Length: 208
Image (cartoon, rainbow, N blue to C red; front, side, top):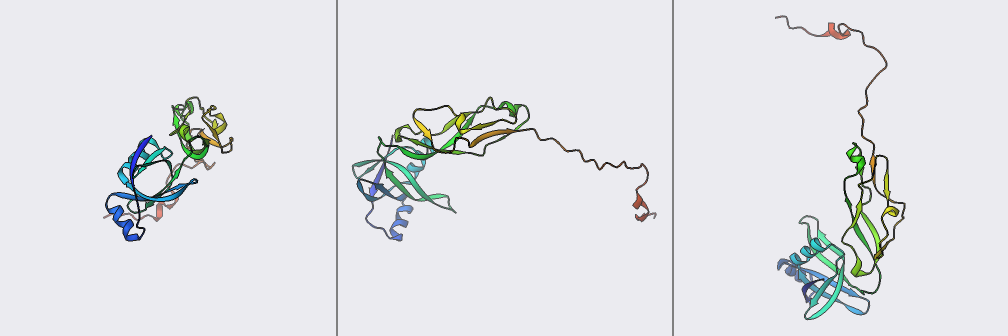
């Protein structure tokens, strides 16, 4: 579990938030059922690094002026132009209670159908699960090695895992292999007569 340092915020004006961002930090709020909401600021680079290495569902310990809080990222706002995080919301987690989160699906192996010339389709890239916070996987790996042409892999085909359960419809398609695309031969059904094209007379000839 990664520990990030945070400081409590006491000013909430737009100018105060702008100063926080200019200093390389992100304004954030910590929410908790058994505690009051707390406004904080934390290092943006450290947060981005943690999310990249451990995933968006990782458990983070926020040390706020010596007081520790086990949290998960609930939401974050990004600047669409700069693609930078401008605000984050964290929820204090109870490690003994189930939470519902979305986890990325990672396909592993090369499908047999693809080796035979088929085209792999993946309509589902994330799946919703219920799990204890400490058991949330960074990704759910799905082996597609034995997937042939015209075959599909559904949520129900993923082996059971005692650490989590799926929330979504088990009949949802994760991946499928479509048949190889064949070039269509254009055939009008009429045979062309050999000879000079009909519009040959209408063409201009430069005799000079």
